[in-house]
Length: 336
Ligand code: ATP
Image (cartoon, rainbow, N blue to C red; front, side, top):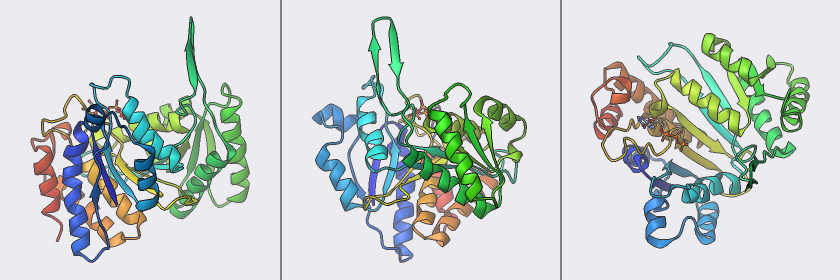
């Protein structure tokens, strides 16, 4: 497993996830964790973002990546973040970005269980466009292959959970790209009659989500809408500091087909002050454990997080007083 702590709050929250890898190893899980320096500091010192050789090494030499966050005010155009994180998501074809929302004790409505399936490699984040005199253009590219993979995974998950699947789209105006999403969604609806599935205009969906979050189960969305919707769902469970995510390539084109990272970014406003909540990073590690088939370890970590919060261990973003490291310790103390 490669560890990329990255920038800002990334290394601080990664430092609290790393002992969980030692803990899993002590329980007999085969795991080697290799830290990698990629991020703003490395870029500013060497001029290297993620070289082709470094990318190939990650792609072919590792099974999974545990990622902190990238983004640094010293690199205002975010060039290195794009070259590292977007390169990994797109290059490794990590089409599925899974962002679950299950409020922890004291952070939101008990029993709520929302899951966002966000397409992770294309759409409006394909980095194609131009700035011209008097106008600017951003293209959004949606392919049948990636959209089909994302939707299939969302249908399978909704069938497994026996919950509603909702597609977020704006095909009324984005006729081409979102038209493709709706067409593929309808085709899969016919293939999965066991799933209660509906397509909703994203604006109406957001309103319904705020008014009645419990009426949603799995939500499927393109890269841009999924980014927005999953930050909103994070707010139902304590906010940016607690939300986990896992990305994967369902078709496994390369050895490395898994990347776990918190939903939050590098949080430059609080970075380096021992204020970042490590829960999003720790729960992302649990998602990775589960995807590797380590269900007992995933469950134990999630139970430890819930137990710590139920006992009042909280960082400042949740109204508590603990720093990043004390919160990490409070969680680890509950693991046998
Ligand atoms: P990106 O575009 O890279 O996702 P962003 O612009 O959405 O980043 P974040 O870095 O996620 O921004 O920060 C958004 C807000 O959430 C900031 O006020 C930040 O302090 C807060 N935040 C982010 N991560 C955490 C955390 N781990 N603990 C507490 N607060 C956090």
